[in-house]
Length: 488
Image 1 (cartoon, rainbow, N blue to C red):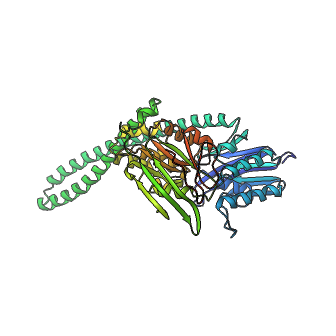
Image 2: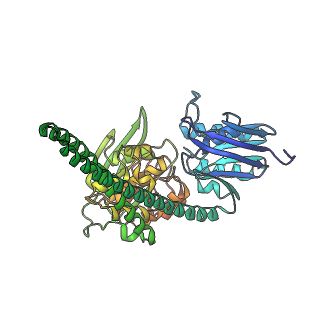
Image 3: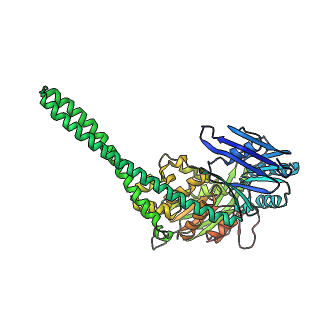
């Protein structure tokens, strides 16, 4: 290790707790320059950070560090101190900065933070002059970096450049991954064809054996019984195999056609009814409480199909509570709620209300969407084809949010209004770009909770409900004991 190095690794190999290889033969050398680690959920970023911090062991290889390291993990321990998750995270981050370690490691530090706390964190990172390694998806934070370490299933690599250049590079990489997946499907299709040919040859041999069996003059009743049982069992297997072969061929052809052209997303989005109809929801004199504390009171709101509004405010102000009241997942302490739920699609934080055994592909097929249209939808939304076949429960939160949105946009009857709780929190850059693009192009209404101003502007939010604080110009107040002025 040279004097300029703070951290180095040699031949580092890391596996998941289940034994799946995550990092293979990693050799790196880091100085005092800030580095961001990026990649999809599940590829091993948090585990890599813990190994670099000396808190976890690698299966093979070495980690050398000069100086003192501090890691602020993504999952914070419950230290018994009062406060929301955001408040506890900010306290631990502030303590880590005050400690002035030689190397500071932060795992998803913006998680649970409200807008003011994120602005504080960005300023702290900008002024930090020691070693720094950050795992994050947050654009506001990552725009401070010029060196990125990209972790993926295919391997790890260094990228030097601006954040916007990194996003463009990852979009190209995602497209190439789609094409490689399609090539694998084609190879599977060819393998299934060979298998079907082998089955045909075996069948012909069996038929020849039956002719010989007849020639040996076995008792016909025994021969027919044996043949009938074999034919029934073989017939069931053959039918299942043929169905699988046919499905694989149809999906292969559909993905090949979909990947051949760059489909405009507007073609894939459903057409909304010409008549906007009555308001989607009405909230009258709503009061919501958390224990003995009033979150907001006297809230009146009328939501129509064309409205796009954001619920903002500090942590603990009741943003998620308001969404849950809107979609009838929770009853208010006082007031009246009238909602046309059949016109609304709801995605909770991390899409936890979409943890099902069904895959996205199965959901689309249940909506009477054929393989060709399903493939076009997935490619148009930039959703990885390989993930579309996995159960929604097995996907990462970011992947599941995108899958849930695709399901809702192509649901029958058509969804006219989306209610989304922090939809951009767990998304990688390619997924976030696809989400913003889809919401911009969609003609329906939207009510979203988010601390990301860039995201809110990108999806066309025109009005705000700010909870827990006095209103600023152009926004409506909804603090405890205060009535929300009619917005719409």
